Image 1 (tube, rainbow, N blue to C red):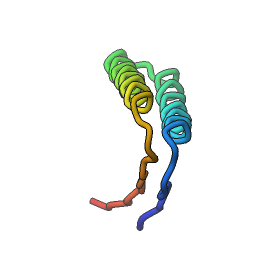
Image 2: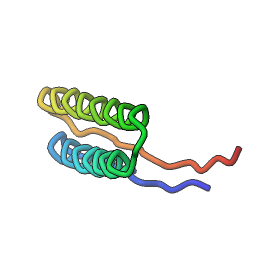
Image 3: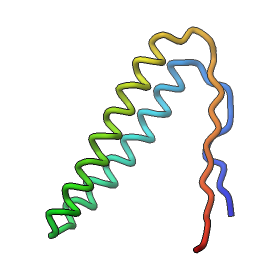
Image 4: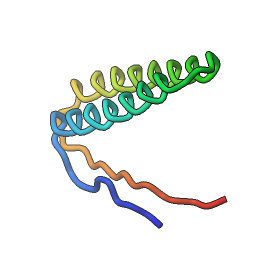
Length: 82
C-alpha cells in the first residue's frame, strides 16, 4: 500500500513552509514518545532523532534561501510488511 503525501511543483517559500510543517509534526511525535519513556536509552534516541530533524530543517532553510526557481516535491509512504 502506498500513500502519496505530496507531488507537485512549489516555490522555494512554499517548499520551505511544507517541509517546516512536516518536520514540526515529526518533532512533536518524537517529543510525545520521549515523554512516555522511562528508559534513558530510549529518551536519548528520541533526542538524537529530534536534533537530526532540526539539523535537516536548518539545512533545508539554507538551501531554500538560495533557490530562485520552483522545486518539484515527491513524497510518499510505502507500507511494507516483514
